[in-house]
Image (cartoon, rainbow, N blue to C red):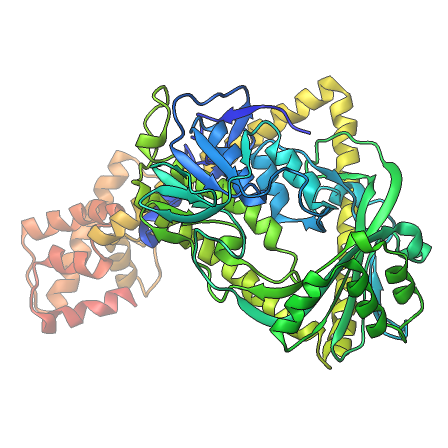
Length: 620
């Protein structure tokens, strides 16, 4: 289920934009670290990179996609939405040639689907459990303890058939079936029937693990995987909508998950769905160690009956519901394959050819990331190719951060290596762990950790529900909502102004500290005249009282006499100018231009330090 979308011109299809406003402090911090400002989701497209609309690229195809699976269709749809003409060539004779496929859990793939405007419905597992081969529980937990948080998490992990996802992405695309590629050279594709297509500006290899475009050789991991689809009634009631695994800690493992029938979850949290249940089925995956690659490939070609018998023999003595599940599966719904992966992520073949999906990074299913990363590949590659001016429609504005074709492919490869390599390594490590003697202990420990995390998630879900209820209560009253929003805006504006003011003051203080130190405010001191008079009056300081003009004259006269008497005793003769400076000194003291002792020295005209010692008695 989806509607038509076109590229968002506000963010140029990226889904995020650079921040428009930065505070002075933020600018200073970024300049110091040399980092680019963190990009923000585009408000026009809500972070999708696309908006509702119709797009029909014109002209001959510039991009060829070899392979019509998840990765190829995701890339084709993303390019179509950006107005880039492309052709899709699929080797299968029809859309339904292959078996029903397998179930997958959409994680990062849900975000990629959202960026394509595609909505896929499925189910969310009601719980997760691990057992040993006797049926003893190693650990069990549910996504939430009460079930009330499920609505909050329903868009996080959605379980559904792979074909449902592929069909939703391919809807509206023109896929050419029955064109099996055998080689690519000089941007020209050669097909099995001897015909060719091209040259193209770019060729995208999305033709799987044994890609003819990649010309790579996958690594056999030493395991065989058998897949089956059975009625949900073949497993105990409490496990029908749960994911569970059973392992012997030696070489064998059974894993089961919901397949189809129930739809109570969606990849889009805004999707208003109703829970339905029609003919529930489960998918099981039985894997075991097999050192002989030749034997593994022979079994994969043997057919459903032989594969089922082989699996039944391996789990014959396990908990009864495991062999019962296998026996209740029709042979035509059972397939097997030898497990392989690729040692190192590799995307760029040459300056015009690139790989995505399993062709670039095939991995084991024990991390559940193959399909998710394939969907992300398609979106990320399309976003970079849209920055190539020659691939953009004539009516489109110039790209933001233009790239050449070669630069676009290399940039995509760098991003893909960083994103996929940890998942590739983890999937290989999980394959070894789940078929080893350490599996039982590790699975039990992991189950306990997951149970604790589930309890935390449940608590967060409850808190979020309370917040949502409070927000709804405010929003239900339009007047109250308006007042709350206005108050929030006012508070945010005040905080912004205060932050800018503090930042400006800090910058001014920093600039001033580099030029001169600020003057310290001096404490109020007694003026020199009061100190002199105090020295002649037995050390008692005279209190300042308001005086008249006549009293001021008398005070000055007394001060002159006191100065003459004090200096006469010390053998110093004061001149008239010196006495005038004494009176001027009081004004200087009030302005804080010098200390009391310095004023006294200046007043007396004494420069010799030895003589100045005689004045210290006047200040004690």
